[in-house]
Image (cartoon, rainbow, N blue to C red; front, side):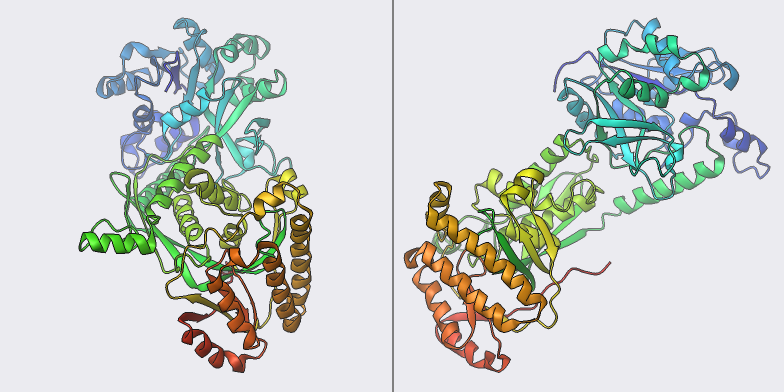
Length: 624
């Protein structure tokens, strides 16, 4: 972390007229203890004062050179007493002299008072409204400052996604570029038809000294009290001065902003308290991702091709996450063995299963998740967790077992940190998972498996070069299939590693070899024909296309690359009248029977050759 010259200014000079009026007029005695108390010193979730949560988040010497608080003359003694009890330097409390709303300075003028009297104009400044309520521990100030430090060409404004019961007409709304994360427009309390954005900006901004120097200029041009709030100031900076301001999303909401009443205070206090109680209950979150079979087009997903895949309910990976005092990744007792019966036992397990358990996948997805959120301007809650996994997906048979673990873990992390598909878009999640495997763990893979595990069901995928280069992902859609014919998987009970199956085709393709280039185009054509056949319930046509898919693959890769065991499983199925192809990179075969009565006979043929046969149960997306 950089040693910077940043100071923090907490604004708490508002007069909270409606809230004070409601408390004063209450005759029940329920709010007697709150009479005269400033909004920032009201109890927040968990009983601590609202300002205490802010002070806990910012009282770190390594982040801020010093911290100041601006209040008004009417409530100055309350904050002086709070400072004495909270180890806040009393001499850093600034009194703006106002006693009623009519002689208030306005939040921007309060900032200018602090800048001028404490000679702060040459500093970077964090400005926050200290009377906003938020859920305890819901963001990490270190991550916020690090993000600001990484955006040397601009300032930073914090925003949150509005709760469904909030209206955009009560907040400053920002429109943020999803690629650069720069704020494109700031709208002060717009109506619903003025913008589709529900990202609400609050007084939680990090300004560079160059922007801070503009504050006197703004106040010189805007003399009316109603113009001297941060909403109008931000709109001026972005719209008129063209100042670069980036947006960073926090996973919590902020409430008690502006003129609110006692009913607002009660409802939001209850809401945040209940949310905190749910998170502190340590109830685990469990997420599953399912194995998949490549029905058509593979292996063209890494070659700007088209594919159709089906997620299957037979095999799955599950991740479990729960809050804990420290961050712990739990090894799987079977897949990540750390205890062995003997050295010979270790030798046998390592020779048979290798060293590639799932623990490294959990560690890699956690690392990538934090990096992604930091890069994309998403501040994560300051919470630790325990993460574990389980899976029944057979190893080394090309059913996307590794990506299923990563997918399940990603879903757990998103749920635990209250992130949604708005934060990590659904069409981006497959690339995220692929990056975990390829960049972090050097696993050779393509997008197809990750797409179908995210979308689930029977998924058509178009990875055309134009799409990938223009939007960064393919086009993905579900195919409606009524009464799929019997599909089965067959694989060796003791399979070999399937990782070398792709041979040198990738190199030949990159070199522009015409046979490979034409082959990949043909895979895409077969996929489009298969989509038509599926939607027409033409299962014989689909069977013919599956056989064509494998024949094309065999001609491109050659028998040596495909392997004798895999070819033997293909022949068993074909000789029994099934259409058969690879469901993935190898190690298993996928078959389709247009005559269901032959399944028992086919099963016996495979089992006689030492194969496991599984009748596929499709996994379609859950209805919501």
